[in-house]
Image 1: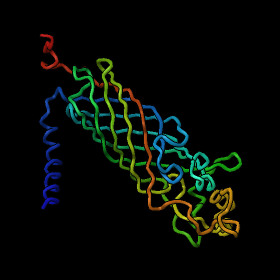
Image 2: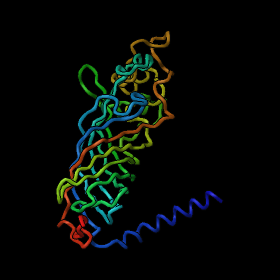
Image 3: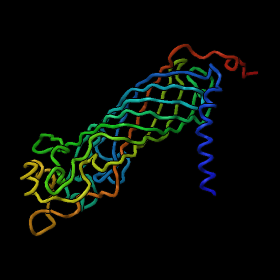
Image 4: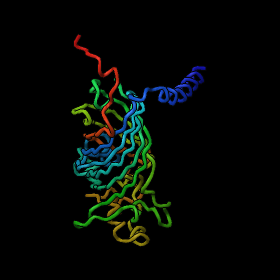
Length: 286
């Protein structure tokens, strides 16, 4: 019964949002466009726990925000960021010996809903508000690793046996993500605002770092996927088996999917004229 009541409440809330939006006064609606810049990182096999871990690089993008009310915003955005991490930077001896590293150029398009804690709009007395956001994204990625100073794309190489007679299909380099996070909006001029935002992205892949399962026989990889596949698959400082390789041993953890994150500061420009209504004309000093 409790689960059913929760489901009914969720359905009622979902149907109420369009009605609430339709009932807003015209002067509560506004539109914005803006730029944002910051950094990106990931949580996965090579950086399992540390937020803002790895080698932080610049990230940035564009966004458009539609505000049907002062409490609700709908934002479409496009972001790019490079994520990098290395086992050599870990304090875990097992990771240090595994000695893998990667970089990945990530492109993301997303549509999110923002809920402002307070009434907020650019150009009004309500000049600041924290907010929560959540939505749906679509990403494109390209994991790479370096060998003798040259970076090679890892997905075509099938470093865990993908594409061989003993492996499955190669993983996809595009997919859906679920962005969510927090931010704060702050007016700095009648048509300009600053946005600070941090958000995580849940994914349904374990291959942002090209590391997930077990080591594959290097002879098989070299024969069917090429020399580079074998070399980049196992870069251990010391093999764990007396055979001189790690075939069959753990390389990653397939039970934990990868996450990625963007942390940005943005500048938003209100489109159209500043709001004018009787509320803004009230003299609060009396």
